[in-house]
Length: 260
Image (cartoon, rainbow, N blue to C red; front, top):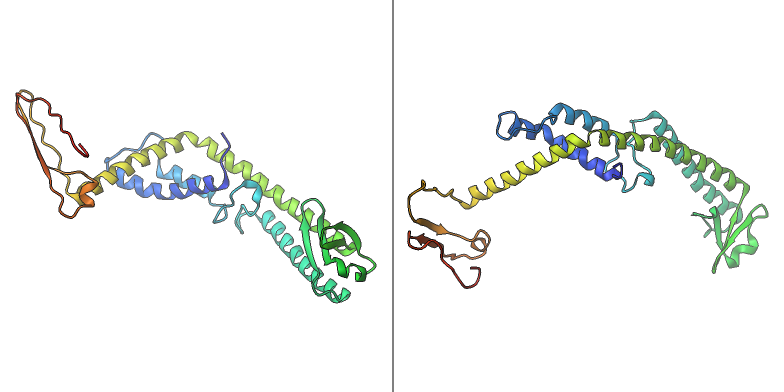
């Protein structure tokens, strides 16, 4: 449906990395055949296409930081430009502190008003003449300078280039996963079956479960020795097992009491 998030795509890639081992352990020797179209080669190809995401992947596509370094030269260049200009922002903040003599000023960002230089109201009267008031709050005054405006424009342009490059990757990733949705669903169901059966097998081995021997048709009676509750026996040190016998005259018994 194209509604997945970055961490969904990363989870698919992580799961597919385990599929070749699972395939060679279960499908190749015929223990639990894989569905048609589920192969290690297909899993490896999709992992390679999804192995572009940062680790950890962001929560949303629009959060940025989607593609890891070294994958796309255009993204690397834009990301370097953004980082350089953010560093320039810190340098501008320090230079304005020295120029104004206001050691407590800071450069901040508001989603509506953009970047600003903030000082307390008591310091507002001493700010340089080339600062322009941008916003007033309860306790502070916010200004902008020509240098800050130029830097803000440069940062926004670099961020837009980076966002556009990552948007193209979003479309590519969603399309790739959507194309493989059929065999991915089949692979997930197959892996879940193996997981459940392996869990039962491990429990049987650890707890010494026994497979009942079914009598051939025509033989009367049922005899079961050493019945145990699979949960309670792990919690009680002196657990007492139960036996059950049904002769031909008694086809059923009603057993009352706790945990009947």
